[in-house]
Length: 225
Length: 225
DNA sequence: GAGGTATAAATTTTCGATAATCTATTGACG
DNA sequence: CGTCAATAGATTATCGAAAATTTATACCTC
Image (cartoon, rainbow over all chains, first blue to last red; front, side):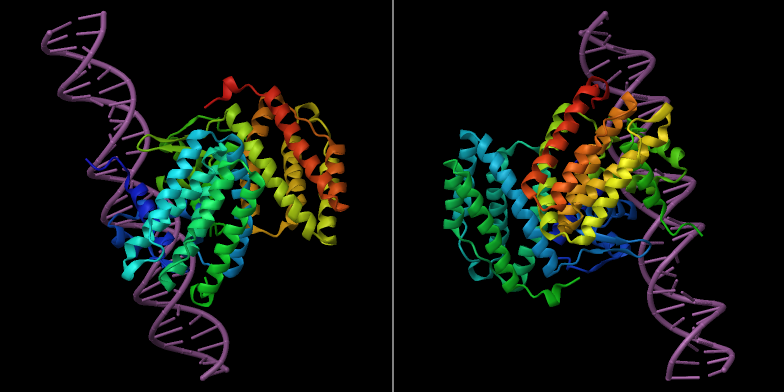
């Protein structure tokens, strides 16, 4: 009768989304009773979802003291960025080596969708942001889609999600975010023409530039732990 | 009164150990009732522990059908190895760049401990295996200990654990395992003398050689999923 | 008032039981 | 015989309450 998804899985998805988008703030305490009311379920599904999120780094657990949303910090952002660059680049190199015409088509399509979203969120229309975030995620996912390594892919995805939380938090506090279409286009062209060196260099620069922007627009004093 | 550790955390550790060492076989079904009796706890701690293990890749969950120990396969071992080489090497490069004399001391000590374990498990003494596994783990951990990146370290650790399961399974089915002290010594020397190129090359070769041996001694037909 | 201790309140953790779902078995019908 | 449906059995998922732990409050002593 239900949508054949367990309550646990549903709560996991909702909680994850709420944390990723910043609706639940970094460091915020996650009381069992509060969450039960928020998602209208019992204690077990909530607890199980929190355990999984803890393992993925979105929440932290202190024995007998409960869960809270993982904190953010400049140091963590920088460490995350450093690591992410290396891992995204490995995946990108493999993807360029193994990708065929299907992969190229995926990329072209993804860039087209990304380009179709207006540069700035018009008139406080919040929907744009989520569109842009989705297409942006899908474009970068397409870049490494041909790497053909489940292990590396899952690591990359996890790091990407962590980074996206910082982006969401910055957008929430600032209202918009950079969206350089030409940067993505150049990256895609290098990838499709199998110029690995250039693609890797551009990818690194792209991630670094994003983080730099984040550092400027984010107030870590406010968000910290 | 308890050792200030929750039942959930305890069960998590025990289950993890049982899977890592092969006491719970790949693909084996993990029924709730069985586990409750095995660890003498209620359903909640078991379920929460399983959720965390699922997130770490040690068990797999099928909605409404329960948990089972993650399967192993040649393809997975090869993908794991490929990915692990890249990530271990990044961590090693950073570690060589940042490590000081303290790090060197840690390495020297770790190698000494590893060297002290007899090459082959003598007279079916099972204790040796676990000693060697521990020292081996600690040596490789020491190699990258100075990389100074929590994000990368946690990824590395997770992959190492996954790989170690394959080693344990091979040992369990074969009784012993290679233990080339000179290989580790050469790796350490290159690291300490800050010869990154050599160290990375040796590290790659070391991991590849281990996997090759595993492929020969392991019967994937038997262990598969 | 400072510091410490006992009590009460709040919160997390765990259990036992119920509800929901899946699997195996049986029997009817073509 | 084989296929399908209905039922019974086994297993998972969830709930609500009890137990254990932490946090806050009140009280006493110096």
